[in-house]
Length: 318
Image (tube, rainbow, N blue to C red; front, side, top):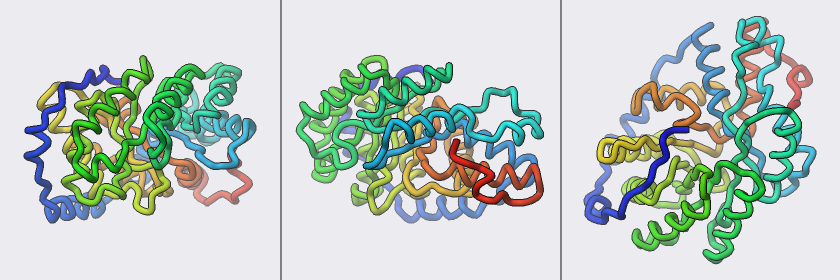
């Protein structure tokens, strides 16, 4: 991970001056989506890069120790060994960036990864995910419990009410407390952009989250009706860039929710490269929150290696 973002005092003057030009953002998003993507071996290389940035996620009501175990095994060996071998990539240690689970499943994930001799980080959602509407005391305890169980990354959700009503000081204070509760764990702050109304609000929430010490800002819980979209991402990564220029600290970015195809993962990588530069193309500053994306990437790599698409049973979950 990058040097920790220590945060800063809340700069309300900076926040109040923010104005986002909607038309310019939409135009830029169209440009990025219209880019030609790499082909053949270059595309395969980019897809492997995408795999290493995935937070492989299960956030279902019916999660059990066994499906969390399967997820962990898949994270440690995300692409079939024979496929990697034919690309001469089998000894490069390709894994996903982390596994992401509910707090109650952290201990299961830690146990599975330890048994597999893997040092892969376990991320846990917390703070009343996905709505963030439980009492602050409960949300803080949830963070502490996840950390005690071995989570080294915590994906918190902000209280959208505070952002929607412009209570930036209150929002800053809450995130500051989550930051303390995280201890040494990295904190990824979910803005739930589909519920923030305007691009200007998204930018302001991004800034306040970074000022409060977030190591990453993340688009969505994946449970809203609108999740990761390219225009919103542009607003967030530009806030990251402005924060970096002002403070010298690099904050990571994590789009999540609805990212399902290999093709989309290439657009996300292109967006990061063009907006923030090559340094942000690595798991310590870029994550893709996804549950079904990996299956499509593995399918495309299978096609690259063999010239045909696999039947579903040829690429099992683990």
